[in-house]
Image (cartoon, rainbow, N blue to C red):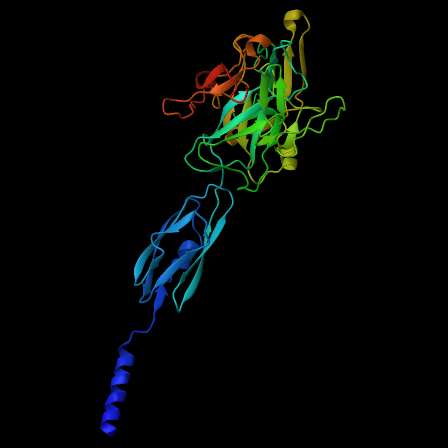
Amino acid sequence: MKKVLFFAAAMFMLAACSEESPFTDVSADLNSQISTVQQAGGSFNFSIESNEQWTISTDGQEWYGFSQTEGSSSATVTVTVDENYSIKPRTAEFSISTATVNKSYVITQAGATVAVTVGDLVIEEIYYAKTIDSTTGKTANTAQDQYVKITNTTDHVVYADRLALVESFINSSMDVDMVSYDPDVRPEQSPVDFVFMIAGDGDDHPLAAGESIIIAAGAQRYEIGDKVLDLSAADFEWYDNSTNENYVDVDNPEITNLDIWYTYSLTVTSLHQQGFKSYAIAYIPQDIDAVAYVENYKWIGTVYEDWSEYGLGVFEEAIEKAYLIPNEWVVDAVNVSHPEDFTTLPFHSSLDAGYAYCGATNTLADRGSKAIVRKRDASGKLIDTNNSTNDFNHGATPSLLK
């Protein structure tokens, strides 16, 4: 009887020792791989050594993923991290778990140095000439029926945070034989007379591939004669705190206001209705705020007006109400004029070698109710050769005017 009991006990111990204990281990270098992922992203392999069912659970963010998220044995898994187009770093959490083990990990990825680069966003359309009232043949002077359309030309999301709309200080019809500036900074910097910026922390205003934003002078619905221009659903507007009670702006509380870093106007800022001012979009670096900009980027120089032809001599005075945007900040620039009076490019030819126009002459009948609209190629892609003479349809129908 003792022999039988001893044999049974021995068999039980042998069976227990032959059952493999649950075991799961993950590559020791996984943490170091994912704790400092570069802005460009990438793929990283790690191993899971296991003899039991395992699962990878994520926090649901879509900018990273795994080649497999479950298994029942050892495996090599690839985690892929997308490029980060925001200037903000980002983090994600995931875990690897079995019935007996749970290990948590954090992915930390750097942000972009610059969120928007040249060509990522372009000015697709500018409606500056305003709407002609068919009953009067004139425009409504008090209406802010103007807008700029900006489009993402890339195949990925672009963040519009810290993107600024600026207007040229220099007039494209300036008589270059009479007026000159010292220094003429245009080869390196763009003189501007307003700077309106989209405020944000780096990922507040995503713009998907191919999508556009509308920046309105006034985000209202305008019924002018037999035409309607509905800007009440614009993405952004600028709102001026006028110093003159007879000329006040109208705010749409449902639409985000641009931050006004500087404007020449003491009342209500409009796009130049005749088309003598030009427009650009620029990305303002993170380390510059409005106070620092106004303190450090004023255009200091002299303007000369030569009236010798009329026996009045040469007059000189300090440049006033002008600030500078370094050309390396400029994402896209569109010079604007009209053939009848064009004399100079407000933005340097390295930014835009030509100019666009609503009308061939400086008459309301020629330019009114018309826009400049960027052309598309046969595939539907917006054309951008940095020459607005070739890149735009001049005197086109505004996309939002009905």
